[in-house]
Length: 149
Image 1: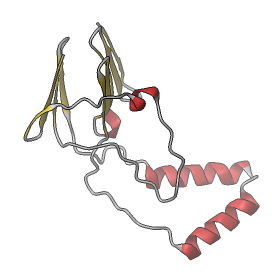
Image 2: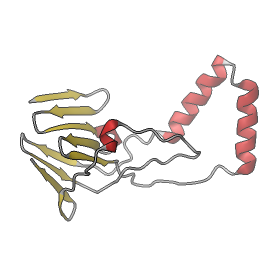
Image 3: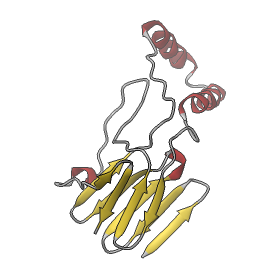
Image 4: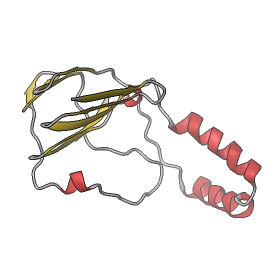
């Protein structure tokens, strides 16, 4: 069994002959589980998620400013820092605990889904695991999900 932990990024990777698991602890324990029989994806659950629309006027102004200043490296660095402070929600997720063994994974915590919360439209990208014929269905007991292999 391969079990790697990358503390700076919050990523944990577990691989054996039964499954491949990737967990992002900095995003509330969002994870992807891939087996020979299918896959399961669960996003982190934000505590106080704010969903708002940018609006027509603000969106138009933002697009015009980007059109005229987007060439500037300084502007792009400032915009990137400002957007990260507003968009990245590190540490604002409901916590999850994982019990990982060779033939079983138990997830304690809230159930998420496959979700993306963006203030604008985005392209949809697929990975081969998402195109699997079967989705894995865990055993659920309150906020505990169990995957047995």
